[in-house]
Picture (cartoon, rainbow, N blue to C red):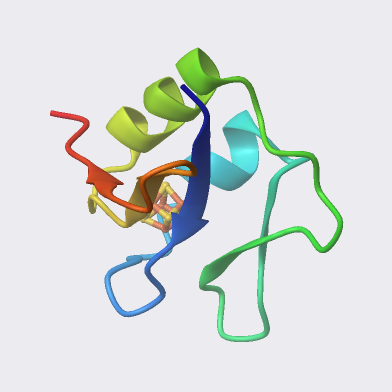
Length: 74
Ligand code: SF4
């Protein structure tokens, strides 16, 4: 199993949680919406799940790389 995390920019509410927890992975864009740091290494699966669950807006999308399906993290 291999997961990939991404930001749904339309849902992000700029809480800064992911940027604070994983500045190696997330940063703010010019509109203070989270985005993946260019070239960032994807975290391990368990960390991806933890990060996604910690987003107060549910804006962090977890995808199964193999199937392409979105994972329900709740
Ligand atoms: S934790 Fe969620 S709402 Fe907060 S900045 Fe990151 S993606 Fe946006």
